[in-house]
Image (cartoon, rainbow, N blue to C red; front, side, top):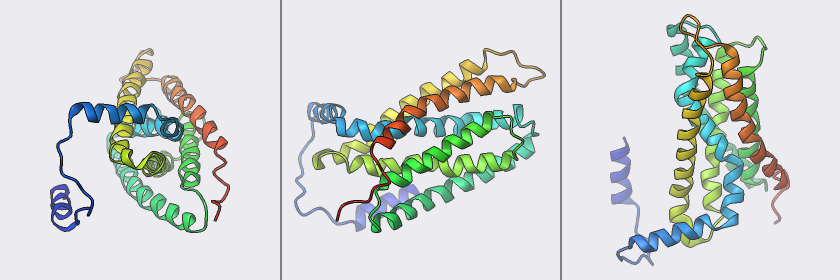
Length: 237
């Protein structure tokens, strides 16, 4: 499917009328990335979602399964059905948040509103994972996966926050940061959980409470920064 879409873009999408064909040197690319990383407008928009993106990738990509086994006490078959439901929720979230952002933007609301509000709810579902509340793990996994996709909306927002000549590099630069942080975070979660001895092949709930609790703490400063943007205010006409 990716190859087909790539081929369609190559064959169907018209060239920009002002496009100039020239070789780009490594030095020029490095200078553009340096300019991007030196831009405060890039960082202030990137920081409020960057740890949420990393948390979503880290937990959904590896630690949700062990959490369902060790904390929710589910059998492998039950956990696999819930993970599948979470995958469906992830697709639904991606479609829903994009649609909702467009609808609200036409009514004068900033795209930041949907993205940040979704991340706040995403953090609540992370808290539910480590709380002592008796909640169906299916609800937690589906809510986590659905609202976790809200953070991905910031890719488009970041791209609009920098100078036009940097937009071709901003997404990949932002993506690089997220993947680096996600790698470190995913590994760190394992190191924290491994501080406790497993019993009958399962780690204790307290291990996950510390690991995911630290993950939540990393996201809170960014969400407080998001509040400073006053995202609920409508755009001036």
